[in-house]
Image (cartoon, rainbow over all chains, first blue to last red):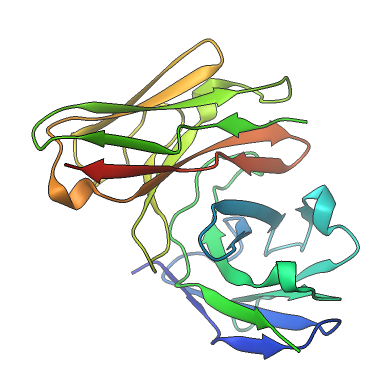
Length: 121
Length: 110
């Protein structure tokens, strides 16, 4: 079945970077966009960015520009999200989610199981 | 700056219908016909309920329906069940390869 499987929980100190992976299976990897969405404890969903796994064309929300990198490895059908210069406000569960075939498709399904990133000194 | 406003909480008794609103507060939201809706249980990833404004993916109960009017989209849950107790989020494409989520609505079944 179509699924996204993410890497495990991470703990980082303030100022460090974290890299989360999202492995896709069960569908044509380069056909659909991948989004990253995060959720701070007890709060709502926050859209972070989108990447085309085929050509790595990407876009991110303005608040993450300069800190967020998204890459794709077609050989392993894996998307990577790296967030740099972490602060306590980056402590959240990070989700990858498959979007549509078009860059402006507004649906996300399926979702990865989520990766908890803890930022603590 | 675009934003989507949802009520923080909505409640209803079993069997009733409830409606969750999602109001766009500024320009930039391309079209409310492209609103998607998600259901999320605690500790779980969201699940797509509605896309393209009113369409249900395969497998989603017909008890979930959506509509839009002007700058407000709405999700209606009919025949409310205990299993509908969850958080619900709307989402919109706002152009320039950007998306925004509403703040979320907690549904409580009384």
